[in-house]
Picture 1 (spheres, rainbow, N blue to C red):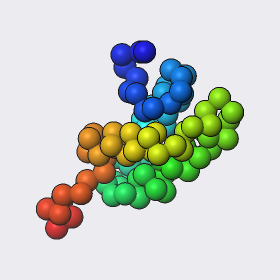
Picture 2: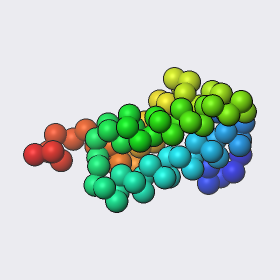
Picture 3: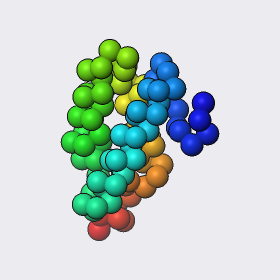
Picture 4: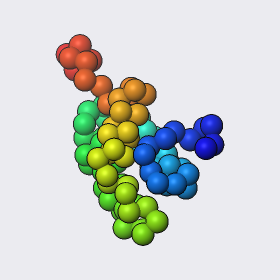
Length: 88
């Protein structure tokens, strides 16, 4: 596995690379629009994963494990913030 690509539970390295590209794009969109809520996942990342899932080689893109890994990455990198102090 490429050391710069995160593991998202895809069935192939190419799948993990594709999902990682989505995550990086979502991070840029969230930063540019100053979005730090679940909207980042549900309105931006999930539709991108659904689009990726349409390709036969990436049919697992919306599996629970993949979605959870993407969501966790977005939380861990501070894109999705649940801290009530942040929203005050």
